[in-house]
Each structure stands twice: as structure tokens, then as C-alpha cells.
Image (cartoon, rainbow, N blue to C red):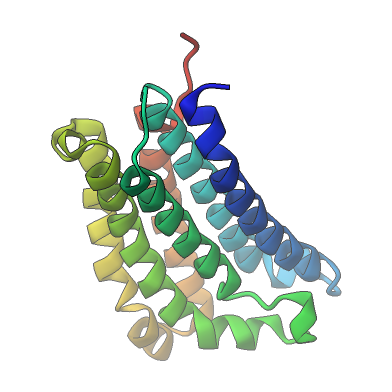
Length: 199
């Protein structure tokens, strides 16, 4: 195995645990009556979390697979970043089956603003951590900045979720959030960091 393949095993485990957290929440939604009509936005949010986790793992793979040696600092940086992603999944705005909560919308309304602020901050912090620990020159690359600046916008918009819910109601806020996340995911998925190429 290469240096990267050996060191990425632990990160792959964390990403797998993150996916497990999200998939269990998605399964919990699907167990509810009329979930497709009542909880489609909640399901979409969990799918978006899963896409982000996968795309960041691809990004790490694309950057780190070229390394011939990895220091403890460049190993711990991505570990910290992906551990933060796991905690975001753990505290996602959809209940886990172990919480035994069936009123998903009330839970979603209560936890969405806080979780989205943390999620927006993570979108900015994660690329910075990976760049500083793997290669600081990445911060000046256009494709890295194409992830960071939409992340800054997402962080700022996250602070208006609670006022938006109070003023426009949860249904309209959900629709607005979905439209914004679709735009943001489109930018993320078109980024070269989310495309693996053979060498």
C-alpha cells in the first residue's frame, strides 16, 4: 500500500461511521407514515449531508493521494476535520432511531437553525484545515476558493434560519433552504476536488 492508502484507512472508518449515522436517520424517516409527503425536506437534508461527506472524502483523496510522505500534523488535520463532520451528522436536525422521537418536524424546526450554523462553519473550516495541514498553497487555488466562499455565504445565511421560521413559517423556510442547498451542492459537485482521476 502507498503512504496515502495506509493513512487513509482511519479516515475511511470515520467517513463510514458518518454515513451510518445519516443512513439510520434516513431509515427512521422512511418508517413514518406518509413520510414522502410529510418529511421530504428532512430526507433531502440527510441526503445533502451524505453527499457533502462523500465529496469531502473525494477531495481529501484527490489532494493527499499525491503525497510521498505524511507527517503526523498532515495526518491529524484531516482526522480532526472528518471527526467534526461526524459530530455534525450525530447532531443533525433529524432524530436518530435511538432517540425514539416520532414527531420529526418539531424536532427539525427546533434543531435546524443551530445545526445549519455549525454546518456552515464546517464548510469553511474543513478546506482550510486540510489545506493548512496538507499543502498551504491550496488556499490560493481557484477550485479551493470555489468551495470556501460559497461556504462563507452559507454560514452567514444559516444565521437567518430562526428568524425566517418565525416570520415565514417552517414550510416556506424549508422550500427556501432546499433551493439554496441545491445551488450550493451544484457548485460543490462541479469542483475538480470531487472528481477522481486515474494516474
